[in-house]
Image (cartoon, rainbow, N blue to C red):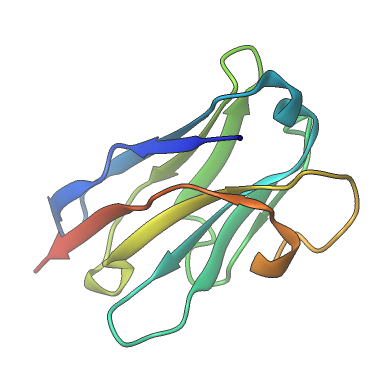
Length: 125
């Protein structure tokens, strides 16, 4: 059973930065795309960012473009989300996700098979 373990969440002031990490338990999943999603209280889960297997292609939600950066280190089987210029509306539980095959949408959570437990990010004003 593949496990994804997120870390790096916390409380930060408006304009601050955080870096989330997501470590996968199996190296084979370095071959496939990974993504970050978030869910705020009372809202549906939404796409944040995704990255292809090599790290050569990245995808972002319009709301985070220019502020967040997704990256991956396949040698460490880890994906990162660097979040800068944080806003109160970024407050949510952030989840990393891993696909188990090629193909599928980078933006659709249904195309990812494995999910982490989530890490809380709170941006205070």
